[in-house]
Image (cartoon, rainbow, N blue to C red):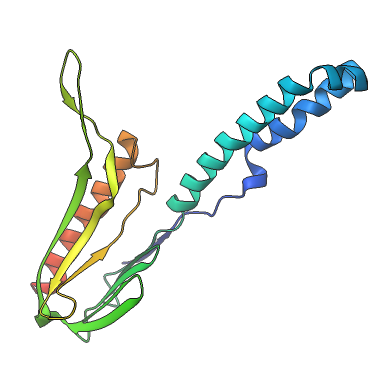
Length: 193
């Protein structure tokens, strides 16, 4: 079975908060006229700015959610993951792995792969009645790491981002963890064959 996953790209102007921010002064003008609009200017301008700021934050997270592209090719032997400036592609038929991180890009035979692992970094511990781990993860340290037999570039990092939620939510952490475990399984199945 060949499957490609892509999340629909969000549109900032179609977000509810943006529409509420636009509608607020119109509603005030409709019910109070121009005088009411001027009298309540501080209130509706502040409320609209806050709504737009929160909408932009949500838009950015949704855009990052939609930036992950995966191709799972059990039939054609091509497996790929792309997020941001990182990319990995396993070509099972030719026994090659293509890696890209930032501005460097290289192709290796499967025999050059020494190990692979993933990391979800926790940034802090929460204090309270029940001390528990804060599930906030550090995006800069998290990712899928591939060690290869290369003096110049001995380790590559492929970035992952949740396709649901964000790094500060339980749903987002679980989604990222499942993506990383899926790729651990794909590497075990493909490289160790």
